[in-house]
Length: 315
Picture 1 (tube, rainbow, N blue to C red):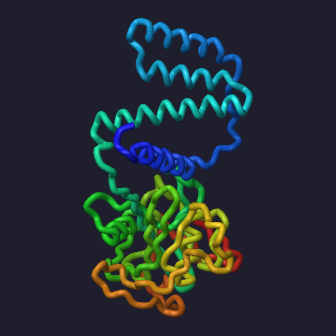
Picture 2: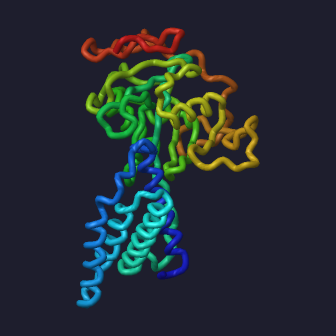
Picture 3: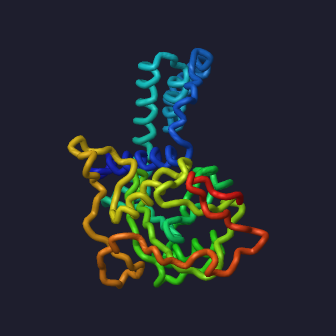
């Protein structure tokens, strides 16, 4: 329907939405179907409405989709429920294609655009700063890197400088950001990661409605409840790998001993105009310690250095 490729574009949108929902809510495999014979009266009523509307010349796509959904709700057999849900999906996808044709969105294949986010690896020796997310609706309760979306009209470095200021109440100069890693995630996010080794001020919780505490963690011993893709990126960056994918199906030919994300080179500069050069063979060891910077305000202390067990101090 429409121009060639219109179905593929809708299915791409469905795939991206599914990945986004999984990232936000998890697989939710424990939820019951909630279907069964109790829905049969409504399913029969929906069929009658379709027949009546068709006879009167008033049939709409809403009637058709409503009938298909109620018929699915009335099923209990997994095979029958699956068949009905496929019909629901087919009717919905066709409706989206018609909307695209009506609005001209299927006039020409659109170039795909991934979403971009930025992440900071604030380093103090062999430790990295993480914050525990809270009240955001995404990964609440898990440790995560300071991060955020790149806004329209904003370059990645400017976005990260802004996010660090908002989340940690410190200032990082754009020239003090070093490119660390880029990750293409299966929900079509492109995540950019930068090292930050110098900043003005002491990190504190700048957005208490989004973060409950901060903690310094050993790069080699991140807490187990770290956001998975962030933990993977930290590991890749400390191993001097500049690119990886996350959440995509792994090709059968991939070797476990040679990850596909390995990259032979890296660019240490955060400036788009800087010339690429190799990362040092090890992370810098001479970084400004917490005692060299202004102390954190007493009202919002940063946890003490993480002990060897990987558990941060009290926040």
